[in-house]
Image 1: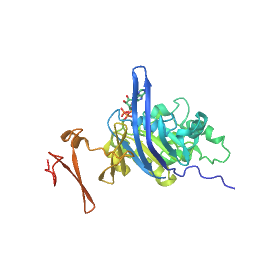
Image 2: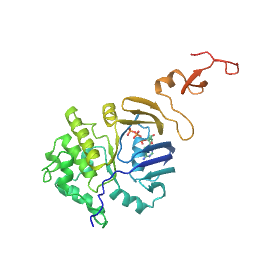
Image 3: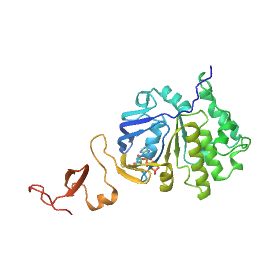
Image 4: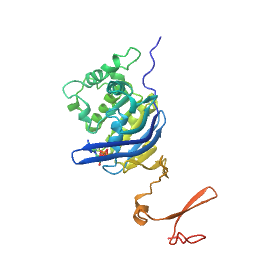
Length: 292
Ligand SMILES: Nc1ncnc2c1ncn2[C@@H]1O[C@H](COP(=O)(O)OP(=O)(O)OP(=O)(O)O)[C@@H](O)[C@H]1O
């Protein structure tokens, strides 16, 4: 019997996900209630200001740490309940993580093929996994025939694609990629985006890409903004959406917040399927309020 193909994408669900770092100077709330659903085989960018919680979210999804509270499912597994060894098994098989800075993912003193082969070892110990030959994975990211080369022989764009191949070594259903284009010129960026699209199309791998590059977000089709540790907004194929969080709150765009600071009262008007928010000078008065 043929072993199952390991690379079908897996879905991700975050439900009121909270993560708090304890430090010598006090607690830091990095994730303050993330509600997010990603379909199997979807491509998504995580965008947002520095310190908003993107890396923390990716570390939780990648099984590098357990969240402080809330639920996070990758496929049918609840990561918030997995033991340390369960998380380690998940990292070696179901989830691949590509760290920021391509070189951090690759050993410099062995060939690309050997790098991938070594990364496949944990998954290879699982009898029911069929792993692709390293050369095949390299071909998927546009590096066919490059198996004998080493990191130092590659251009920055090729290095980043080699790092993607490394992340794919064990045939993960979810690939997390941190800032894959931050140090690349336009052509290197296009090559990386093309490689991501090929991985997604040919393997069905669910892709989550952390990026500061709005163009990358636009090209992936769905861009989720993380702000203050929760989902602030979403862009889908050029359209902008606000997202209601699990606790019923709705984050406003920063430019709106600047004009209407916290504590501003809005009157909510439902009509014809539309919701209108109107600021009100005198909330106790009857009837329609004055617009600002
Ligand atoms: N190991 C840690 N210990 C304590 N606080 C941390 C730790 N890692 C991150 N933080 C804090 O958690 C919050 C979220 O950080 P995080 O790195 O997840 O944000 P980010 O959106 O990925 O930022 P960047 O875009 O700069 O990488 C920040 O306030 C940060 O200072």
